[in-house]
Image (tube, rainbow, N blue to C red; front, side, top):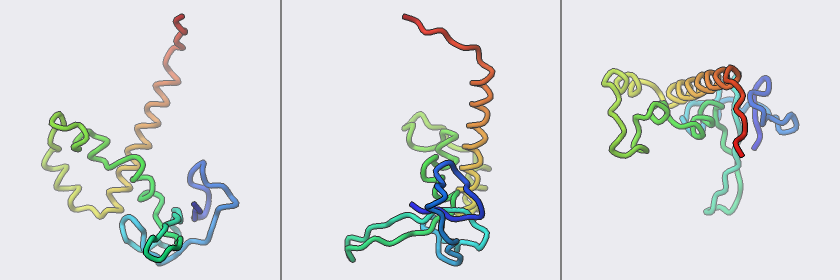
Length: 133
């Protein structure tokens, strides 16, 4: 997997795998064009029909959204919890349906990063636990 952008945007962005920004190429997740100042990845895609590998451009947020899940999932409003999942508030649903896939991805990744920072602060402030034998 190669990456693009003005600077590394994740620990996995190995300098030798950096490539030019594929300006104008459609994102493989949201289908919006990649902008000239975008950050993202080029994912190898194997086509069984053609028997060849090509690359699919994807915005960084769209790629990460597939790893962290939707905002609905992170808030527990998805079907992953089965019948235990509460319905999202109507205002939440209304707002989410107005957003593009990319805007939803940006929100989901932003929320995930915020929650990770909160968890790190809690961990740093917690007293050390002793091992029980």
